[in-house]
Each structure stands twice: as C-alpha cells, then as structure tokens.
Image 1: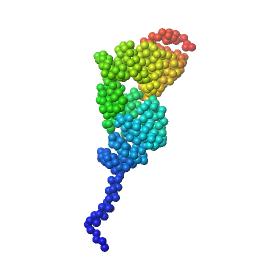
Image 2: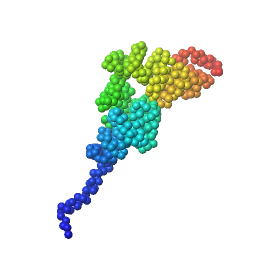
Image 3: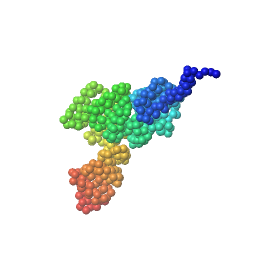
Length: 490
C-alpha cells in the first residue's frame, strides 16, 4: 500500500484547488461586471486594465473593451479593441475602435478603422454603424442615414441609435436627430456620444442653455472626450461667453492636434470674443481693430473676414463690409456663414431683395438645419413675391424643435397673406403676436388677413390697433377709415 505523505497530500489538495483558481483567473470579465454591479468601478477598471495588459484572447479583449468603453476609459478600450480586431469578431472590434477614436479626436484613425470594419465583414451591423459615422463626419447625410438604418435593424444596440441621430444631423433633420438621441439616452442615460449629440442639436436649435448641463456631465465622465470640449466651446459662444470658451477650445486643440475642426475652433472663439465687444457701446470700437489684427496674422482665415464684415455692418460701414465678404467668399465660395451675411447685407441693408435670394439659398443648402439662414431666406423669397416657396421655407423654421421666436411666424403670416391663404395667416400672425406682444407690423398684417376673410370686426380691431401703435401705411388706413364708416368689405 502506498504511503500518503504530507507532500503528496499537499499536491493532491493543490490539484483540487487549481481548477477553481484557474477558472476565476480565466473569467476576469465576470469579476469586473460583479465589481461594477457592486459600485467598485475603480476596481473593475484596474482588473480590466490588467486583462488588456495581459493580451488575452481576442474574445476576452472585445468584452473588456466593451466594458471599458461603457466606463468611458477610452484609451484602455482602444487598446483592447486593437487586440480584439485580430479575432473572429473583427468587424465589431474595428467599429468600436472607430467610435472610441472619434471620441478621442483621432478622426483620421476613426475613418481608417471604419474602413477596416467594412473590409472585415461588409454585412455587419457594426461595420455599417462605423461607416455611417464616417459618412456623417464627411457631411454625406443620405449615405450616413442608409447605413445607420442598417445598423439599427441589426444588433448594434444603443450606438446604432446614436449613429442614426448623427446621420439625421448631417442631413439637416434636427427634429429626427433629437428623437434618435433621446431614444439612445433613454436606453443608456450615460452614453457619451448620445449626450454630446443631443447637446449639439439643442445648441443648433437655439437651446444652448439646455445643452450646457449635458456637456458638464460628459466631461466629468470622460475628461478626454474631444467632441465634448468642442461642443462646450460652441455652446458658450452661443450663450455670449466667448472668454469661457477659450479654455475648452484650447483643450480640444491640445488633445487633438491633427483635428482640423479643433484648430479652426480656436479662431472661431477668437472672432466671437472680438464680436462680443459690439454688445457694449463703450467697447464696440475695439472689434474692428482686433479682427484686423487677427487677419494680419492669418490673411486666409475665412471666419476672421466674415467676423470683420459683421463688425463693419454693426457700424453701418457697408462698403467695407462688402469688401470683407468678397474676400471671405474668394477664399471659400461655398462658406455658408459668408453667404448668409452676403444675403443679409443685400436684404436688410441695401433693399436688394432679388440679389439676396441666391446667396441665402446657397447658405441654406450648405447648412440645411440652420434656422437663422432659413428664416432670412424665407423673408427674401417673400419680398420677391415667391410666396409658395417662402411659405415652405418658413414652415420648416416654425416646425423646428424648440423654435420660439416671433420672426418666422410673422414672415410666414405675411407670405400667407400674399398667397391669399388668409386662415393660415391668422394662425401664424396670432402666434407671432403671442410671442412678441403688440407690434404694429403684426397687427397690420392681421388686419389684412381678416380683410381677406371679409371679417369687418376683426379687421377694425387689428388695423385699429396697428394705427394706435403708430403704423402709418396709407392704404391700410384708408380702408380702415372706410370700414369704420360703415362700408362693407367686398
């Protein structure tokens, strides 16, 4: 009979213990998930960092990368996805790598990873998702949308909803973009890309104050997220705080030195800072020399030339403004902001209504979701009596998410009066009056709308109010006098 020694017993016990220990070591993902569930996020990150450093199997690396991305540990997630891309789920790994690279401001690398995802599996929902994001970054809304819809139909999860929102943004449909981002955030409230996308839509639809808290949350969760810094700077510009925007723009440029948008943003903020002087009569004179100095440093800066034109317009130096716009458009003939100010100069300051239509139309084509551009384009179309086209443009504005200004409602009502759509005009002008209060021009147009409906009482009410507010257009006052005298509207 074989003797059982202490050493042989220890070896036997070791054999019994080894399978459990090996199993525990082989399942770091389950351990990390348990730690996350228990609230030990730091412990989970440490464990996952070790897992990524050990360069385990591609499958484990993909799972580690997924968790790290959810925890906004973007650099570690990228390392994991690079290893995972050598395995069987290469399309998903490359696609997830692309998404993380975009959030880190590595746009050229993100595009390359999206192409690699498609090469690995052209039919993959994840490959479609990454390709959609790349197309959206390039401004190709139609292709981005088709690819995002494919990703949504597949199994790409919350990220597909975010890609759908980005595709709608690229196509200029901000209402649909907001809906998609909201769906993504409902499913995953902490999703970084969806949060930044929603903030961008809120800013672009005039709700920058609502966007700012989302960006504060995003940057607290992921201090390396370049798009969040860029959007934070633009939100602060929109809120009239360009000095605060300087830091965010500078951080974005440091984190992503090869991102052309991050570099351009610094000039954008500098111009916004100079233009902020215009709001203070005591400092307004500083804007023009500041912008001239910026142009002296960078003669080919389109944004600086457009800013200089704005400063000249505020000072009613219209010839100088035109010269600045001519220079901007010579540098970039399709620049939407330069085209907008070209149209504005002709429409509002030179009464060249026909001459304003073309540049404003091009501005809208270059940035279809821009409410400011569409409002002025609709006004120009109304002024040249292209009433159906004006109505279509202005209805797009009034139907925009969060639109709360009186301007487009008033212009829409005026175009509807011109097109003899009097009931619609009453509704639009009443909405304008609800927002703006008693305004002579709105009351006068309400008077004409009721005149068209042969409603004498409401005609007298609104035309009379316009007269009381100082409206002095002779034709309206003549008709008002006759109707007040008892003459019927025929």
